[in-house]
Image (cartoon, rainbow, N blue to C red; front, side, top):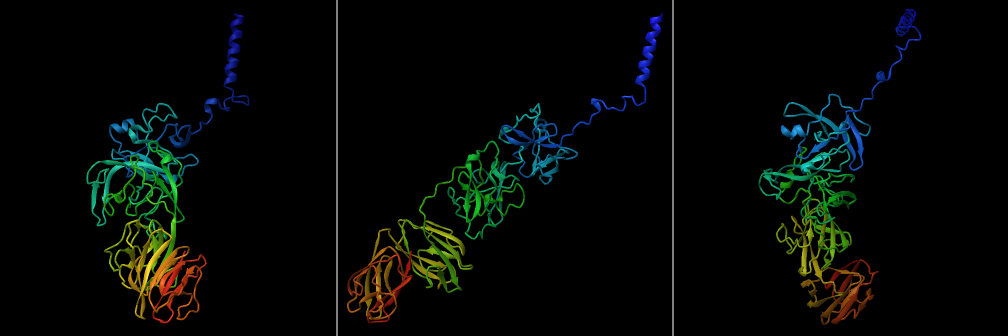
Length: 508
């Protein structure tokens, strides 16, 4: 009995202490279960050893993009939405390194809402059964892990070309009229990228030197960081275009189209007609290597004097004759607004008889025309203004051999007549000689000595004899190897008759 009372006393004492509200009470000291639990942001930025930075939900489950969501709406519905549930949160909170400006919310056609990143709806994958898994990337060739650092994206949609008249046509992947979705590369925000069919590997043949046409087809560039897994990052590169960087894919310079007003538009595939500006995807063939790898022989700066003449930067003479060599490449930096500069086979206004072999941008008024002279080019071409007949000059085409020969006769005491090497019985022509080249004048002008001079005058004073043999002959061959230090202008003159004269423009 005594032991029973002791047990009861001890039990009551313990209970009394546990209910004590005094200073010794443990009631106000929180237990481990009462400690605040860290709440993860609704979108987290995780680092995967294979994929790098990826977006996940608050529990660490990977988020994905769907290629057919080209226009920013969700195209994963019904059964698709069971396997790929739409990601949605009531309150968006973000890890450091993510910008709220890149996120949005869309209304789905099935009645729900969905969070987007850079316009791409975000999804979870039912087969990711644990946080950190990335089992959905590349699935069906249309699902890609959501990353914040894609430089480009891949989408899948119907191509709808819009031609130069504004007519819209559904096109297939061969850019022919037809139905069906086509894969193509966009920027990271879903804006369509294109290439120009006349470009070559690493060579932009479209953009003008002053970027005056960049507003229509802007060159595209972004820092190359990551690309969707179905694309090979080694297929991308960059080139310099008149001081501006441009991204390339398989050698093709990349452009956007100003006519694409909204995300998902791909009207450029039909402008000005289908096939001129194709989209790109992993099946795109490598851009062709440039046919001519010659460096530019000479660059001409071309301006205008009103509607009367073209002016070149190497001489003060208006509408000067040019001498170009077959196989060499020349650039014409044209700045003559309202006066399109056309290389033609006939000296005339209009666009007929344009000579386009080896020429890019023929007929522009502002920008760079490149001309690689074909080996079969005729001996004479012309540059012309499309609208004004007085703005024209001759282009003599010569072979690369060192000596250019021409015959010189006379029309009484009125003029010298030149034939051969681009001349067709031309009287007193002004023409171009190039430093370092040799010219042969087969003179047959009895009584009219042919003199090369530094001053346009009769008599024998001011003869220019450097590099000249037989200067002043009237029935012999005069040879002239133009010195490297020759002045920019020389003259040919008859010793006796002031009307028999012409100008040599000396160029490099």
